[in-house]
Amino acid sequence: MKTQTLILLLVSVLSCKSNKIQEHDSKIKNSEFNLIAKGDLYGAGGEGIAKQNAVIENQSDWELLMTQMNTTNNVSDSFKETEIDFSKYAIIAVFSSVKGNGGNSIELEISTSSEHNTVVAVTYVSSTGYATNVMTQPFYIAKIAKTKLPILFQ
Image (cartoon, rainbow, N blue to C red; front, side):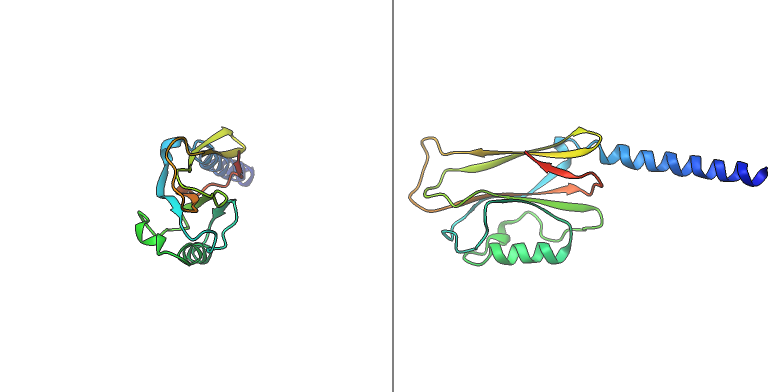
């Protein structure tokens, strides 16, 4: 009887702890992401980065991305941070297609639509009035708290 009570108590405590972790994971708000870099690549596609939405969860993938972005110009020198603790954080990296002119950008809004998903709403802003004749590729890189929830891009 004591063993059953002890097991029941232990399961109850672990369940509560698990629920608190899930509650935290499911409540990412817009203010809980940090901008690492936002701007343009100017290599006319020479960096070889396709239009994409990526989640980076380890150091080797992060270093590979920075190396690829630095192929033509040393873009990572302007990053607000490059040392990421991947046990606590993940990186969201969004790249637009290569554009024939400048003045384009990307905006992100990161939130949860339910307790089952983290949603990254991506908005591509086209140039209106301001444009250059230089080929550019807009990008947006942000750091978010690590979550167990799937990350969906919209």
